[in-house]
Image 1 (tube, rainbow, N blue to C red):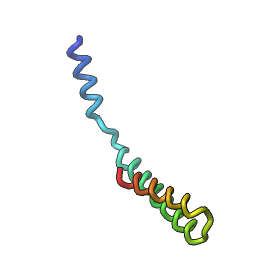
Image 2: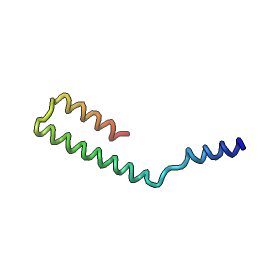
Image 3: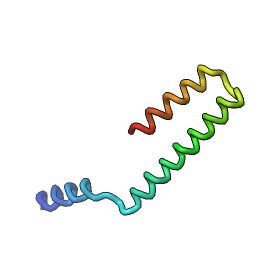
Length: 65
């Protein structure tokens, strides 16, 4: 019984949902929209430059993960 439990937990850890690629694509779309909004905010000087710079750094970190 213990062996079956260990095998089932191993199988569960390795399983990836079929919709993962759609979820990742959705996140990529959100990052692209965020980048567009950041560009528009910079062009219109809608926020403090330091704040915009910090947002740009966060965006780069999110894109690299």
